[in-house]
Amino acid sequence: MDITVLFKISYGLYVVGCMDGDRPVGCTINTCFQVTSEKPILAISLNKNNYTLEAIKRNRRFSLSIIAEESDTSVIGQFGFCSSRNVDKYADYGYDVVAGAPIVKGVFAGRLILDALNFVDNETHVVVMARLIDTVKGEGTPMTYDYYHRVVKGKAPKTAPTYVESRDSVAQATAPAAKRKYRCNLCGYIAEFDGEMPEDYHCPICKVDSTQFTLVN
Ligand SMILES: Cc1cc2nc3c(=O)[nH]c(=O)nc-3n(C[C@H](O)[C@H](O)[C@H](O)COP(=O)(O)O)c2cc1C
Image 1 (cartoon, rainbow, N blue to C red):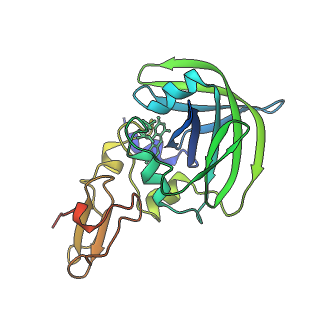
Image 2: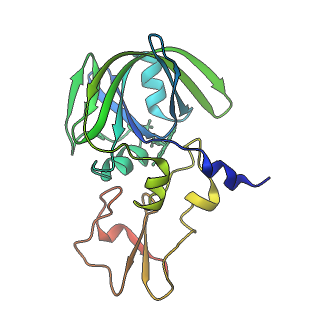
C-alpha cells in the first residue's frame, strides 16, 4: 500500500488548551474537523499518552486556537514536542482564560471554546467529540499541515495520528549536499547553513538554542 497517498489529505494546525486544576495544559494537534452544523459538534483525535487527553477527561471544557501562517511557529514545537506533565508550556507566551478554557496569547486565526461530549476509543488514539460553545475572532491565514511541512519545514512526533516515518522522521533531509545540516535534538527540525551554525541561532520550531543541535553531515 502506498502510504504517501495519505499526504493528500488536508489538515489545519491547532493548539488545544485545557485547565488542569489551576494550571493550563495543552498540545499541538492537526486533527480537527467539524462533524455537525446545527449547534456544531467538532472532533479531535488525541493520543492516549498525551496528558491533554487526561485533562480533558477530567475537565471537559477546552479551547482550540487555530494556528495561522502569521503565528509564532515556536508555539507548534513548544506545545507539540514536550508534555504538560512536566513542562509549563504557557510560560513564555502567557494565556487568557475564556469561559474557563486557557488560550495561549499570540496571533491566531481564531479561537474555539468547546465542551467534550464523548470519547471514542480507537486503539492508540481517542477521538473527542465536542460541542462548540463560543468563538473568538482572530487574524491571519489559517496554516495548513502541508504548509507546515513544506514552508516551515516542520516535523511531527510519533504521537501525532498522521505521523509517517518517511515524512516526519529526522532521517529525511532535503537540503542540497553542499550545505551543512544541523538537526534539532528536540523537534527534529533541520537547519541548513553555508558554514558553521551561528552561536546565537535558535530553533524556529521549538526555540532551543544552538547547543541543542547535532551536525548531520
Ligand atoms: C505538527 C504536530 C501535529 C500533531 N498532531 C497531533 C494530533 O493530532 N493528535 C495528538 O494526539 N498529538 C498530536 N501531536 C503531538 C502532541 O502535540 C504531543 O504528543 C504533545 O507532546 C502532547 O503533549 P501533552 O502530553 O502535554 O498532551 C502533534 C504534534 C505536532 C508537532
